[in-house]
Amino acid sequence: MSIHINEVLPLLETISRQQRDISTRLATLIKIFRQEPEPVEPTLRSMLKPLREGMDEMREALVRPNSSS
Image 1 (cartoon, helix red, strand yellow):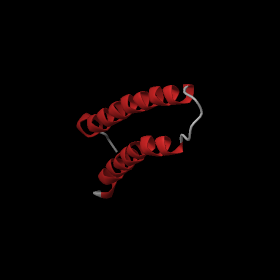
Image 2 (spheres, rainbow, N blue to C red):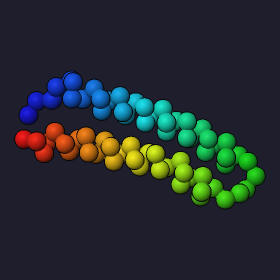
Image 3 (cartoon, rainbow, N blue to C red):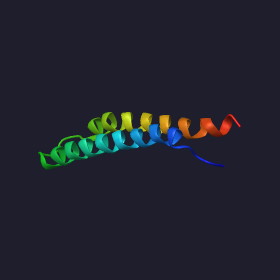
């Protein structure tokens, strides 16, 4: 099975975008944890939701080409 760059490029762009998002969220977490103690669970949940959705998109994209053969 060969993989063409046109099939992989969108996934690589998605991974790159998600890496930037993760870095931004990590910087926010560092700032939050340096503050006085307060509940962080709501903040963590709101920050993780877009990442979970992005992972679902990637999973679907990776499975889709295989299901068409």
